Amino acid sequence: MPLAEPHDDRSSAAEPVAGVPEAGEDASAVEPEPTLPEPVRQRIVTLTAAVLPGLPADEVPVPLRRVAKFAPNRRARLGAPVIAAQLTADPLFRQRVTARVLADAGDLGAAVVEGTAPAAADPVEVAALAYLARPRGWRELIEASGEAVRAEADSAVVAELVREAEQRASRAEHDRAVARVEAEKLRDELARVREELGQLREEARQLARTLRETQARERKATEMAATERGRAARAAADADAELRRARARLAEAEAAAGVARASAKEARSVDDARLWLLLETIGQAAVGLRRELALDPVDTLPADFVADAYADQPGVAPAGASTRARDTDDPARLDQLLALPRAHLVVDGYNVTKRGFGDMSLEQQRKRLITGLGGIAAQTGDEVTVVFDGAERIHGLPPAPRGVRVLFSRKGETADELIRRLVRAEPAGRPVVVVSSDREVADGVRRHGAYPLGADSLVRRLARS
Image (cartoon, rainbow, N blue to C red):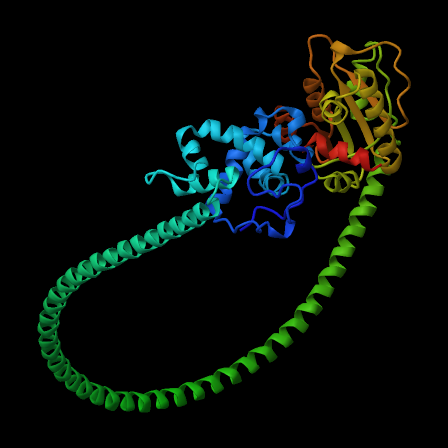
């Protein structure tokens, strides 16, 4: 194929070049560019790209000045279209490139300029040099090169076809050998299958005998099943009759139960009347006993006597009455126990505050707990006592809310011991609720009849208030 369409605007300033019409010559006599084989075209571009940086800057066409700055491996690849166009359109540029290419080619370049080429020379190289130098008969050299390239391509195709044919023949021979081996295997397999077939036939005969015996046993089993079905039908009829008799007995029993329920209801009414009369009698007896003993309403409670022993302790503020809890961490259980009559709520102060308000100071913990207990005492009317360890007591505590008694343990005594003393001071039968997550405290007060509850129950109850 031609490198590019000819368009020359600088050839008038150069000396005559082969293939370019001189002044006064008919331009129509110039032959068109020959069609170059692709290998020849690529070789021409490669030779030009190699010598392009060596040309003076003013001798390099403007479109190629940027290409000349490319790296060698990119110059021929990216600048190929521009290089081909300049070689076709600019004979002077082609002459300058040819001079350097022929100098690099040495003897081969000289031979090409003379119109001859060594027989051993590469036809592509000869055609590329002939295109650039354009000596007499250069078109024939290019055509001969194209024929040589095509011949080489045809030879390569023929060689490839021969190689493929040899490979197919080798594969066919291998396939025949494999087929022979497979045929031997198939013959062995056929012999084995025939042997297995004989065994299967023998097994089929044995299975046929077994089938006949099984069918005979099945007929006998069918006859026996028919007999058993008859027996089962008779048994079912007997069971139905027995079920009807049982239902009749059940109806009689239900009737008797109705009569018994009516009698029990009447008896329960009589018992309720007797119980009411007994409670009325007990109430009147209690009123009479209180009148006979001349018992006045009490102003002090059992816990007050324990509190009096701690009256000399600074920071202790006595109080009155309050709450009641239970033996789980459920605040609902605490509400149930506080609803019992005359309940007494005893609280292990720091045990509760450190679980519920541990991020506060001790003073804020005490104030928060005592204030919350005041709300519970006001809601329930129960007796409430909160006990703190005396080692950290302070002077000048604010007054405790109404119904809340605040105690500090003495020196050498813990709040746990004071709590157990408060529980022991209560009369048997009075509901006493102790709030503490200390296992020893809970076990100790439980032995004296109190209800131990976890500290979380009170914390959750206070948070709900």
